[in-house]
Image 1 (cartoon, rainbow, N blue to C red):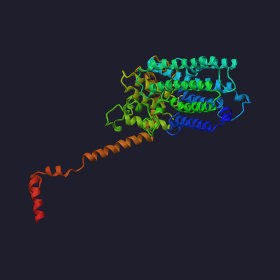
Image 2: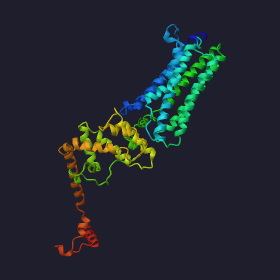
Image 3: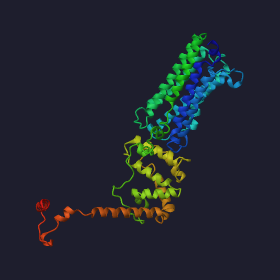
Length: 462
């Protein structure tokens, strides 16, 4: 036991490493399921790479604990096995520090979007290195002063500054969370923020307890083995609890069950009634090609047929954009939170340069939307919608009238009208008998219900 406590390779070490590997696999599955199973489009920008960085930082944190605390039996002869590589750089700026920095960036985004009602003034790929900078400076100072011993333990005089750096980041996270706690989020963002604070605090507490035990009982092999195994196992569970997709990708966070059809659109996830501005008895026969396109698009059946035609021409982004803006208009102006959710979704899906379904609008109009001071403004997408309707008039409408999609729409409407007339004109014999008068009856008999019943009774007796 004394040998494996120093060199690593104890049975408990391999058990802890196996649990850590299993937690990394679960983390990868949790992050990849929305894209591989539910086939949702991969978002552009920080919505995707902040989540990817969380997975990367979690893996680095676990790997740094394994390598720094000697879980595996190997000799530290090469430069890559140095304590300063794993215990300082990988565990700090590339591990725990990167996890906290990502969560602070996400909290900063929520504060700007839902409290300030605007997109963040600093891009995430710029803000994240700035938040991470103190960790990089701290790791540089530790690397220059060389305070670690051969077991990757640092002296007591260095513990207080390191713990203070951790506490500073948790305090910043608490500050941003407190600033948004009055917002009625729809995708558990606030719960994930508080859970991140709790997980980070638990990590620090476990790390401090393990350090104290190792310092006080450095000669005890049993304490060394148990403390490092508990540290790795608890960290494995904590990275799973820390991981969150609801802040950056709210729709992907809902896809934990087989409910992709129910929450495949942001409008459905927010509880917005289905599109269609007219009454239920919409008819395709009332469609007049001479009417303006913006009026025709209010007909749900026409809009669906026109959307299918545009998709077949690989130009359906404009119609899908119109559909989602109509859903946004159904949200009351006073419901700022839901309007911001929907507006943010539309910007990420259609407006942001390089978006999955980027629409063809002018640069001026695009910048007006991205730099808006109020994401809940009722006319946020008005100019963009005007440009796209004009673009559809020029490129799609004329071809649609001569397409098979329009012919199919008219044919379906005609068949539905015929079926409706057949149902209305179906024979009802009871009413038919009651409408026969004595003058019209060639037998000049009265067809009252009582006589009909008595006549049938006599036939049965005979």
